[in-house]
Amino acid sequence: MKVGKNRPIKFRILELFLDGEGHWNYEIVSKIQEEYNMKSAYGRDSINFDIIELASGGMLKDVEQKVDEKGIYKKDFLLHKYVITDFGKVRGSDACIRYV
Amino acid sequence: MDLKALKAQESKRKISKGYMWALFCAVFWGIWYLPGTVVWVLNPFDEMYSAIAETGGDGTALIITAVLITAFNALTVMLALMLWNGVLGKYKELSRTLKEFHPCSKWFFLASIFGGPMAILGSFIAMGFIGGAFAAVAALLYPVVGSILAYYWYGEKISKRAAIGIGVIIVGGITIFGGGLLTELSSGNVQWIGYLGGLMAAAGWGIEGAIAGKGLDISEPDVGLTLRFLGENIIWWIIIVPILAIVGYPMYSFALQAFEPFTMLVLIFAGITFGFCYVCWYKSFPLIGVGRGQGIGNLYGLFAIIFIFLFFGDVPQWTILVGGTLCVIGSFVMFTEETSALETLRGE
Image (tube, rainbow over all chains, first blue to last red; front, side, top):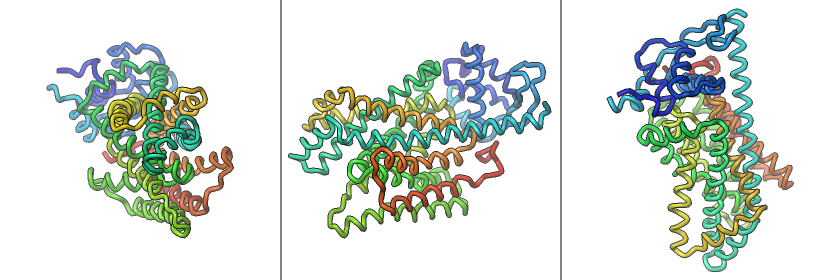
């Protein structure tokens, strides 16, 4: 069973990363914006801050950066690519996967 | 702009914002000791104290009054945080997180047991018995408790640098507690309960931090902190206050009298400062790291002394000044060990 949008946002973010692949922040942010109906600029920044918090908690790791030249997320800002860490997998599985 | 310049700019922005949040935390936390001290001399709490002291003695009167003050503090913090979450549009996230009892709310409720009836009650007891400056500075010992718990519970290593920091904080703590105790021992009148309150604050906040962290890292802090105070309100208003009322203390009659304008204003001031010091604290962590966030946050001890001096004109004993300074230095030594790794703050 998927986590889905009835669970806390950080759970869902971790779940999206649990596939072990690297994901760019703008991909995750727009997916969450869609699922949780948070399409404002404020919603976008708030989700991005959740990702930053997960990274600072050691659950995600910032592996690559590029400049947002085309403005796909925020023009002339940095885009970050993250992967889940082992600690993130443990915390994410504790929180999310208990229904599987 | 190229990648390197943007990276430097982003990191600079993060760090300056993080320090700003941490400093706000220290200021709010320090200010909290003003309403916390003032509330003791306001109606109905001063009357409650004398009423209970007549039959039950000073010690009991002080603790029962401290319970009611702490309960009101929890209530106004909750109001401030609900307002904050409303402004941020986080009520939906609040209810989503509340439902996650196993991974999240369980930890928040457990944390509120140590944060409320231990740390905050202890702080109010210390403020009432000994004074705001002592209460503020005594709680600076909490990182020692936190790191010792993390050592036993999670097997987190205590580095040499952290050990030195702990040593400095303990020397500071001995100075704070010892200085006051020696003076009182010589006068033959020791306010044991007040010192116990100071220890309760340090131990309670240390334990609270270690427990709450488990739920907070996978939830949004604005939401998590609100649930932590929801837990505390349940403890006070649904469990402890009714029990004390059943035992025969006049809890409700005095609680109703607290709704007079000036008392409410002071209580709301306490709620706002205390609620936002927590919010600012957690906002700083992802930006500058938990270590620096807590290190800067601990400047609250000095801010409290300064504010108490400015508003009440009280100059604390030199032992409190020296001990407080040692505790702040110690916490900086402890918390600023990973200077090179701002991006990754926990081991991978």
